[in-house]
Amino acid sequence: MENLKENWLTEGLIDFEYKKYVLLAYLKNVKESFSRVELYPFMGDLIFHYRNLKALKTNKSTIFDQFPKRLSLDNLKNLELNYKKIIEDDAIMEEIESIIEFSLPQMKTSLDEGSVIYDYVESKCEILPVGLTSLYANEGYLFISQPPQQETEVYRYQITIYDNSSDVVRAIRTNYIYNIKRTFATTFEQIKLQLMRQFNDLPNPATYLVLSKLKFPLTQTLMPVAKRMLVKHISQAG
Image 1 (cartoon, helix red, strand yellow):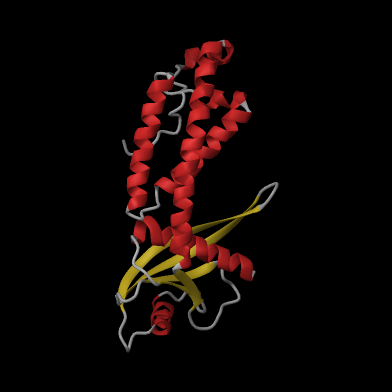
Image 2 (tube, helix red, strand yellow):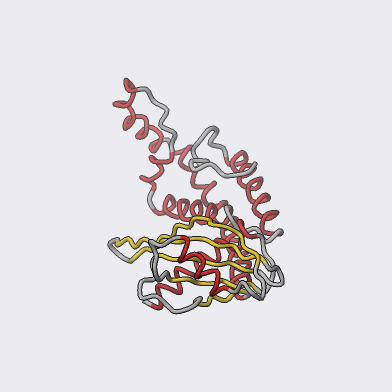
């Protein structure tokens, strides 16, 4: 099993032993991934499922959204009635509650393990501006380097800010540009100048370097950590 389906709790057979098997098989894959210091996509997936189960635990009405809605248009009018029957079925609800009670601490243990790995990776990285700091930092370039490797991964980033009722949410999108080998004649500043000549829509781009002291899997670990570090750095600076 690779991923845990979004509606795994209510899809198919609602049976404690079966769902326990499904969850433990999934968490086994998570543990194997973490043992390779590969955080994503499992870390984000775990956070989603953990928060979802906590919401279900405190609000049973949201269980309705979890049930697969494979109904024809003719049967849509019966959806509320079908749901009411499920909610009123004490045996099914008791089984679901037992699955949630078992699953939450299991997922929390895996999340804690992932958080320790994340903190360790972040502690081995530093973020530095390249060249002069731009007044507009929500769009620019991100360099990622893992010495003693001489290659630098170059990305263009854009941060979008969303306001909700309780907080400001920042989302980051990155586009890969190229991998470039650094030499004594090719510094980070010179790479930035090369980008400015190549992409003149950003005449004075904000450019940041995330430098890792250790080698980590780029796609599964270092890149997600670097993106979060960049968002946090710009947020604090702003």
